[in-house]
Length: 203
Image 1 (cartoon, rainbow, N blue to C red):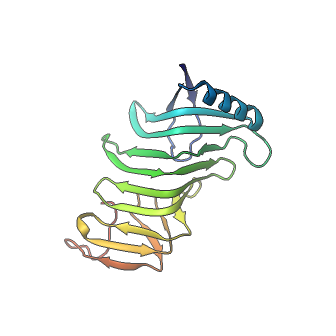
Image 2: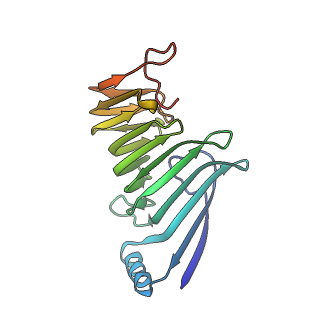
Image 3: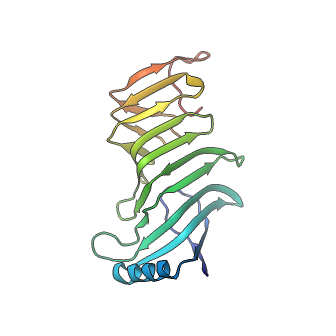
């Protein structure tokens, strides 16, 4: 069995503003798989890490944790791939609030960070779980680093906690905490609670 541990500093993942400590651990049990990865690396100028776990912290406080079965870091300067990060086998990101409690998590079957564009994309079975039990589902989700917003151009659904509502939209934009959501062609129902007459997703 071959085990490799790598430590990287200041990898520019778009979701994380704070400087973090990044720990990538990879273990290969099958020699043929190792050889396959080495061939890919030589042909595509790409670093491949297995069983990835990335912890982001600020002043000893954990802000987020990313996990995935595989991460590819491209170094090819052609084809606009330079320094792209790709998760062909899926990923999950868990975000934590100032008290260290989970605030939301995002998972998808595919992910990519397009460094030059300042865009991170999630595709295929994208699910966002809020800490209160509310859920967002779609087939693609983008994060714009410059404008600090999420958006997409395909159908998306919002399932509120306690079965208080279920909304659908043809596309949407939102802030990073999913508290200010603008859905296009929104349909569905919502049952207000307390004095609020408008949906407050993720609260």
